[in-house]
Length: 464
Ligand SMILES: Cc1cc2nc3c(=O)[nH]c(=O)nc-3n(C[C@H](O)[C@H](O)[C@H](O)COP(=O)(O)O)c2cc1C
Ligand code: SF4
Image 1 (cartoon, helix red, strand yellow):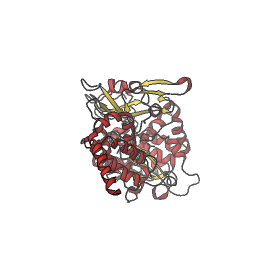
Image 2 (tube, protein in one colour):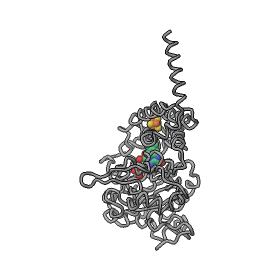
Image 3 (cartoon, helix red, strand yellow):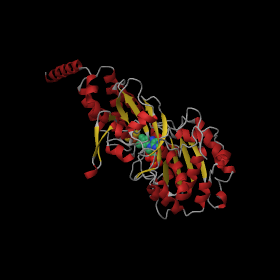
Image 4 (cartoon, protein in one colour):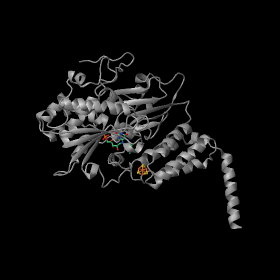
């Protein structure tokens, strides 16, 4: 049935609503009756008649890449579960949605919870998990309630619990409220938190969740949006689904646009079907009046910033092309080739009214607050970066502080237990690479002289 949307909430013609089909739909509610009235749980019934391995094969064939940040292929991840495993297998839905600039999972949970439960149930059957958790961000109390209710309804209808639909397959799903920290979204930190501990990320190797996850048992962690796609893959088949989007960048994905555009919001598009220019100018109604584009952070606050006047050389051999920021197709591979990433789909648009020092300081404040503190480079470095940009914004930094800032960031990157190290250092590295002049222009050269004088006085005092 074609969907009718609430007034003012109609999808843009360039959107293709699959996962978000029921979001903002007129007359739609979260009840199981509504969901079933449009074929809800039919794909679970179909899955229960299949070989579990055949479902994983469909997901592999679809080429579904994770929507939580890293873009890792879901079917390949499921295939990492150890063969001949005798321990329980767990599935965790990562609903922590903590990356700044990202706001899609909450709408799925709030407006279409059964889609997620069906996707999870199919995934659990495929990987042999009889117990699954939805780890939901602490700040989403309403989402947690909606999920609890939906789980109860699914139980009553025999889509969860013992002997689901007479198949012999048992599954329980529990909602677990998060601990209110960004690092709880990192999969191994999440697992520690789920076990009732502080969310200290674990070292990989050996703690790859598929091998040693929850309670040191094989565990699959996937994002909300990723798990929803599983249902749609089964509906049309992996091969058909893989025709949506572009090769190696298949399916649709939800782009969350915030910042300096006329119509910020969520837009579900075929991966790579719109360029950055189309996203900003068509879907988001353009930049604010009289403003010009300064930069875009394309995949959540940890993604490297792209400068508006850059030329990006992408492709290989005869297929090498130069792209302006406006021409970049919003897909995993092209954004990576441009030196950034599609990440969690959070596109942050920055216009010429913004001070780069202020934007970077804002980001650094967040990461300094969120470091879990296990690794020295991250614990100390994230705070130093914040303190230096605090000084830049206050006009109390010297030009050489920018070099110090750069050095601090590059000494975090690659030297930590988890990828938070990169998440917190990439903004600083890329802002300095792209906007060094502006950052330096916000510093005070006179302070440099004072500092040098102070240093020579100290040196002289030490000598003398
Ligand atoms: C610091 C940090 C925070 C993260 N936060 C989230 C999050 O809030 N939600 C999410 O789905 N993935 C998050 N991730 C990625 C997860 O670790 C994991 O890769 C993801 O949940 C896997 O799901 P996917 O393969 O379906 O994307 C985060 C990663 C890092 C390093
Ligand atoms: S990189 Fe940062 S967040 Fe990750 S484990 Fe180390 S201190 Fe914690």
